[in-house]
Image 1 (cartoon, rainbow, N blue to C red):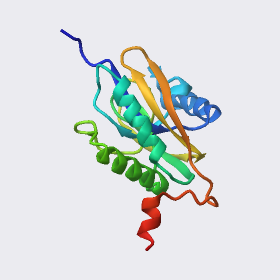
Image 2: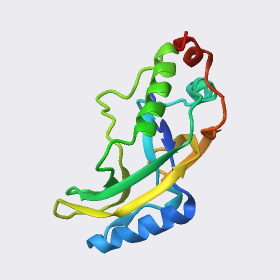
Image 3: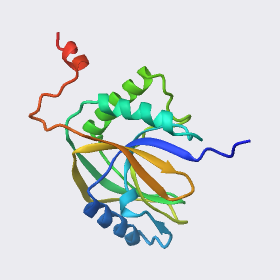
Image 4: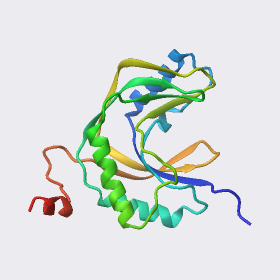
Length: 188
């Protein structure tokens, strides 16, 4: 008899580590006396799967999906601090077109590979800064921005506060060609 699933896989974008440190320090501005994320865990989930017991085969299939995604760099901007009764997060007030386009490309490849998205998941771009027990709030803040130059595949070891990057893919410069065959065919 096996226990509950112990692994979670998800594609994500991450801010540079120096910015992630500033972001987690900012969680204290909102009266957070709870648990602040470690800077190396700060991310924006792009696509996520159901938790699994064995990650090896699925991880290999997800890395193949990451290898097939061609996308350009884009700017991420989070300018709204939001507190729920259990967490503090940054959210964008405006749609981040590059993030949504990257997600669409990943989802299309994942679906073509016959891999299902996490049950009940709804894409809602945010980056969690920490966990607390507090009153809900929503405040505009000075924009937290960065140039997204890569996306990663993260293996979260559930219950261990451990994130392992098992795939990393650079996004191309706007001047690079790098379009996939599928994108080129759309032009015809």
